[in-house]
Image 1 (cartoon, rainbow, N blue to C red):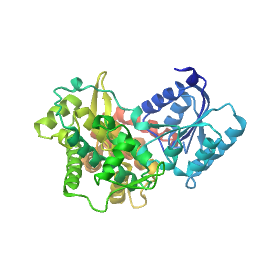
Image 2 (image 1 turned 90 degrees about the vertical axis):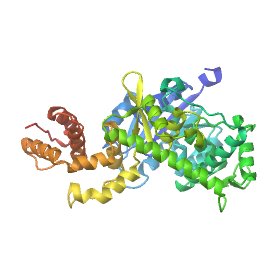
Image 3 (image 1 turned 135 degrees about the horizontal axis):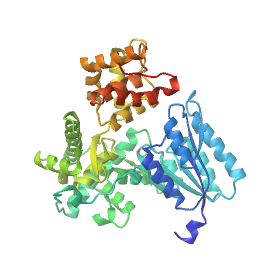
Image 4 (image 1 turned 45 degrees about the horizontal axis):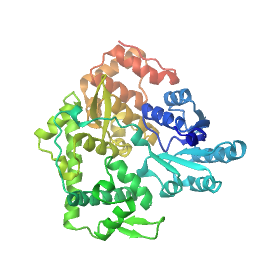
Amino acid sequence: MSDAESKNHLSIFWDFENVHEDFGTHREMTERIRGAGTIVKAFAFADWSNRQQMAEELHNLGYDVIHVPDKRDNAADYKMATYIMDHMVHYPETTCYVMITGDGDFKLIAGAIRQRGLGLWVISNPIITASELTDLATRYTDIQSLRRISLDCPDVGDCHERARSITEMRHIMGGKLQEAVQTISEAGNKPGIGNVKYVMASLNPRFNERELGFLSWNEFVGWADSEGYIVKEGELPGTILKLPDTLSDEMSKLSEENREAFEFLVRVVEEAIDEGTPFTLPMLNDELQERGLDISGVGFSNLPDFVFSAESRSLVRVMPYGEEEVVVLPYCRVDRVREWFEKNVKRFFGESVNVPKDLFLEKIRNMILENRSTLPQLEAYLQDEKIRQDYQNILDASKIPFLPPYQMTLTHVLLGKGHKCKETIIKVNEELSPLGITLECP
């Protein structure tokens, strides 16, 4: 660490409901911040009532966990903004503010920090980050980059790498630039030239404009504009990137091939879950080659690049497995879980149950992932007559008429995955303890 870095005094303000990952990522992020200087204060803001385990984990990492009941929209944002303004007055030793958020509502606070000549380090998911924040930041970190497992190609078996000319790779990356612009626009954010760069890197972890023969990001964007991949509007640093009104047949074909390759990957990974054994990377590498998927055709030189790019798109998740291996699991987004509940909530949980809030849907999504399951599997478990009978037997033995939807869902998934009754109720009782309910086996 340089002398300049060692003199940094950083204060962390975390909009947890806007930006969060798994605990391992939170720990890595916190260690990275600590390595940049001295921590003055660290706060994490959210409605913690249904995140008790995470609140305890963040407290153990050194955060003051500020509970903001979710009774109105943006309540945590307002509380965090108040804390930052108060901090500016009472902690003048802070030289850099670390804001873990992508919410554009913080642009005025961020501007005030910069006007005082202070550092601003923004950490977020760039896809859902307002360009005003990344434009103001003196340092930016994609939170997803902190959780990627480092893998070299020899670790995943026979990785074939196909050499391509610079001209071919420029063409492919021009298409991926279009995808980055479109992704930001679909998230409701402004595709500023700086923000697009972060999203481009997030969706394509090995992207490097210098390997394409460009001296800088701006030179690459200028080339893409001249070739018709995107349209630049406005002068730097406020340049906005847009898609052309019509895409050429060649560009449309590349976009379609890219989408189909990711859909094929997800289908293969889901099939492995349905058959009971998730793919390790070597197994997945062999399977994709056997089934004829040419990932080099859509711009990826090896399997890790392809899989991590799919992970950035929230299509799959790379998870540790055993001591040295990892597995690739399906990863359904919250909006997909919401669609499932809108279709099935009355059918499985009763006429009086409404579609839950996003916090609950996210909890369901994480539970499915942690138990190496899928939404179709969940639906199958809820309909399976034997599992339904085992569930009812547990309710009868416990002398309770029903369980809340999350605990009911968890019970069905655990039984469906082959867990015995005792093992199942231990895990479910952990979730029921705040409600004062205890399950018993027949």
